[in-house]
Image (cartoon, rainbow, N blue to C red; front, side, top):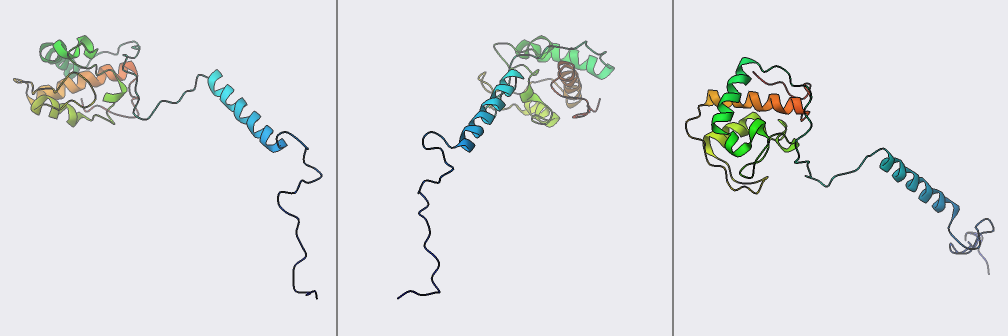
Length: 171
């Protein structure tokens, strides 16, 4: 007894179709693989690479033609050379005692000006480097820290760490 309410029998989903090649990969899979290979080849040819999350280039960036230091930055350079350069190097290039500030990790969007104030006035625990904790720097006023920040941001901008449209120093 057959019922007219039952749907017609269906072909099994794994049954071969007449249009599918008998062996090998499906044409859409081959085309997808070729597209992915071509895209990867284009990225490599253009020099595009991806970095792991949190990776950064610790080497100083090549400096562009240095712009003239304003008076605040010039004062900051003097304070930096007196109190900071022994650990952070000439022009904030880093030493074996302290990190360079000419690095994306010290971009104003990651280490804002307040981070510099805290580090100088209170000290800071080691977190992005292997130099140990930074102790407070005695004898440096908040005004002098502002001057040092102005100088460091000038060096960073000159080195291309940030664009003028990303951050405007207050000095």
